[in-house]
Image 1 (cartoon, rainbow, N blue to C red):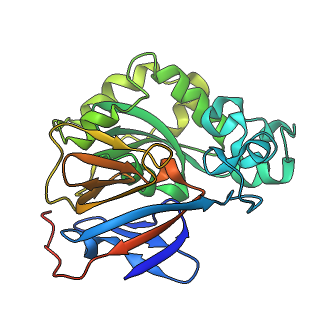
Image 2 (image 1 turned 30 degrees about the vertical axis):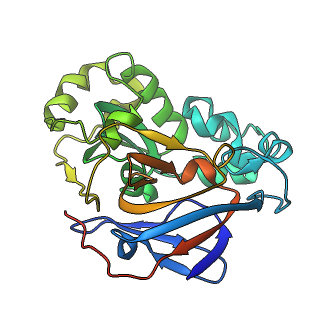
Length: 273
């Protein structure tokens, strides 16, 4: 059976084991049901997530022109401390920037490959953690806008990482950490203007991914270099499909690519928690 559509980040649901879905225009696939099955992915063409044109994807699912024009791809998205909507100052589209920046944001600690600090809108908890492949996470600040979250993150990343080692995360070569202990150690480094938003008593959120087998060595698949491939879907972690022969496919890294997904008939092997 074949399905075709433009790739976008998979919606997720927090459950005992994370539930993944792949949305195409006319179909919604429950990806957990495909674990243990043979699948194939074939590149068809590009489709920019903004303009919809068949133009080579530059970054984040957008063509070059859209990436440098639309507010969804502005610098403040990746660097929250650059947010200016709280000052009434426009970057690319003040109405959009107010809508996104002037809402509650969470500064969090997450453990994907190591303990890291990050920022996300409150409405994106726990989705953001799941997308990063974190097996445990905890909110440490809840602030009223994106700028303050960015200020806190900048200060804290002097003392804890703000990056994830994706290879370590995908091999599941991680150890449990006491995030409450990390929170308490980092408290003294929180900027004065955000201290009132510190969350003293939160507990960790535990996250389990649907994976039958983790890769031992990682071979990353790229549709530019390998426009068609097939194999057994061994699991899903973050926004990566884990395939047989230690291959991994970063679905989010291919947003804006129209693909044809083939599913071979056969029984589905139930993934381990």
